[in-house]
Length: 61
Image 1 (tube, rainbow, N blue to C red):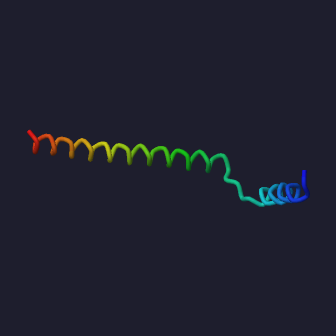
Image 2 (cartoon, rainbow, N blue to C red):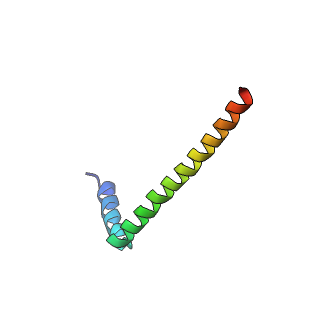
Image 3 (cartoon, rainbow, N blue to C red):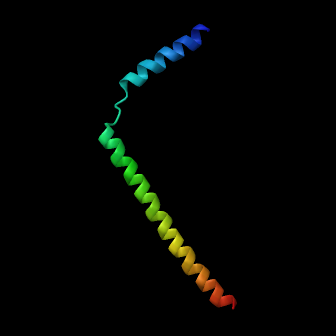
């Protein structure tokens, strides 16, 4: 390995030690929030899609 690659890997490792990692509880909470928010947005868009499709069908027919 060249010295540049070794230096990069060492600096990356040092930087990762300084990262303030979330706790397991925080990670689970954030993950649940993202999943529930995504489901909510998907449901909202699905309802809008259904409404617009019904409107278009009534306009066309």
